[in-house]
Image 1 (cartoon, rainbow, N blue to C red):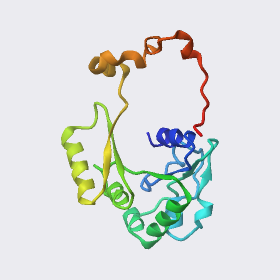
Image 2: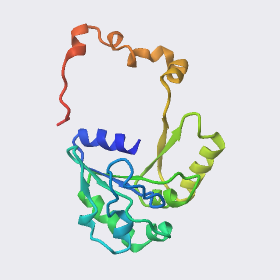
Image 3: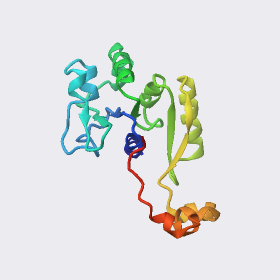
Image 4: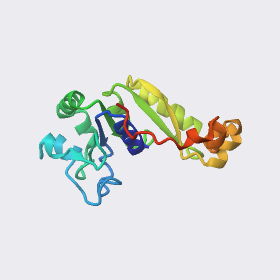
Length: 193
């Protein structure tokens, strides 16, 4: 979800930085790289400079910071003066800085990050997240004074979407969306200027 949102924003012309803030699972920089890279935890512990953790991607305007090396106390790093410092520097350098954090139900790291950013999105997995868990996550964010933009329902199957929103099937049948069939063949630019 975070990667897709970051790419969409970057393709719209914004300078976007995605930070993998799940320092409890440094799994080979997860999906954006094959090898472990120095990242957020390495910067926050003072082992490396900020310029050395920001990676360019093959998408214009999209940059990435991995979670970094395995550490014992992520919450201590997220509440440090060095984290406040990185927030200030990145706010000045990028149009949007997105943090991908661990699930709120498991640890407090996500709520800690949410308390320091402008706004938060709750990502909910269809068929997996229970309503009481969602309410607890919302309360946790509110207790940390986080501004919640909304909830994104993720991993919705086409069958489930059509079951509840069948009358809006123009997303699946584009010929019904366009009055002039030739209009559906117009090639649009990849970038908004």
